[in-house]
Amino acid sequence: MKILFFDYWLKGIANFNRLMPEIRRQCPDAEVKMVHVGSWKEPQESIVNEHDGFFSYDISYYKTGSFYKVLKIERPDVVVMLNLYYLFDKAVIVFCRKLGIKTVYLAHGKFSTIADERFTQFLKQDLKKNFASKIRRDTINLLCNYLNSTLLEYSPMRFVRSMIAMVRDPASMTLNSIFTEELDADIKLVYYESDRQALLVQRKFPDRNIFVVGNPELDAFINKPTLPRVEFLLQLGIPDGPYLLYLDDGFVQARLMEKRVWYDHLGEIARIAHAAGMQFVIKLHPRTPLADHHAFFSQENIIPIDQKIDFKSLISHSETVVSIVSTTISFALLLGKRVISPRWGATAEFKRSYPEQVVHYSQDAENFAVWLVNNQPCNTSVDYVADNLGVLDGQAVSRIVTQIINA
Image 1 (cartoon, rainbow, N blue to C red):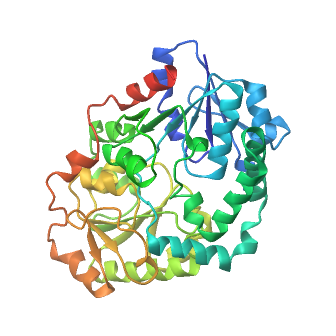
Image 2 (image 1 turned 90 degrees about the vertical axis):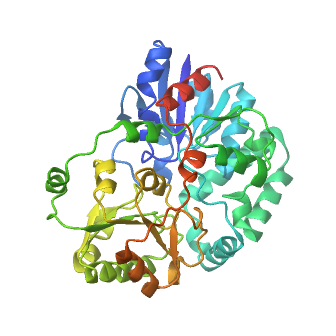
Image 3 (image 1 turned 60 degrees about the vertical axis):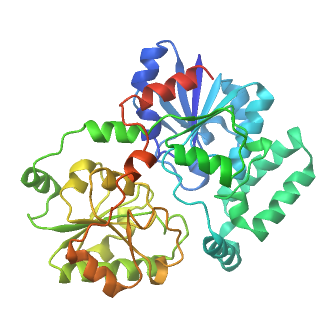
């Protein structure tokens, strides 16, 4: 059996690495590769990389910009993909269907943003304001592949209609993309029942081949012991004392927020934290490069973390957790931590992904400052974790691999 992992870049490689021991256990002779298109967006240090039991290949390795040609060269039995929203995702599914290759969509987190009207308006304004910046090499390559897929199975008019929809309502071709046969992966694997309902109700997917498998990250997270506080802070390189932990959403790199605006947002929170006698620690999103922001963090006395670290201990020893819509909020909730989400200024328009009985949403800086020190519980919903964070039996990876192999 030949399994091909696909993603847009290498920063989500952990979603595939964690599957390899179980793949080797269930199917010892499986051939496993990964293909990504990272070079379309930025130069790659290496075209071929070795990971935990498989190699990844940038699409430039194949001397083509056509993913259809890559699939014809590799001829896998199944393609595992981490996204099921975008035009290129549609192209991958159509290409695989044309070649008789099975497709498995593996969600890589909780569906944190089903774009509401305010967020939809933000995307429209961003497209209008920054239209020229969208015409990049990666955009052109993605659109060329989508055009090729529509010509293979449909007609040029489908491509034209999609382009018109993208301009009129970008969310309809991204986070709010409604089901079409182009998005009909053979198997859809989601972490939580709430995500299955999101596919069925909000995105109108038919109720077939959607399986709730649990969150493999939570399996490992729950079973991992917490390091003693002093030992952990020594590893972290910060003095013992209370710290506010900010879980970065990666908005700047996702082009959902300008860097200057993000700096204003972080600077204000840092000043509030310092006034409360707390250090301000920010765990950067994998897509956020530390080098781009190091000077700002130093200026504001913000402690950035971008390397791999004991995430459970990082959350456990924090005083309070702050984030906007990050799926990592789930980890804080599992550990019973207070989560405060700023909702003023630049972050006012973002969707409230968690109930107000679970996360406290501060409407202004003054309210945020009060809640930071008042020690009132935020999570007053005793059923939220059980109902929304899935089955915590340590078998999520096993279920995922079984579905891939049997696809």
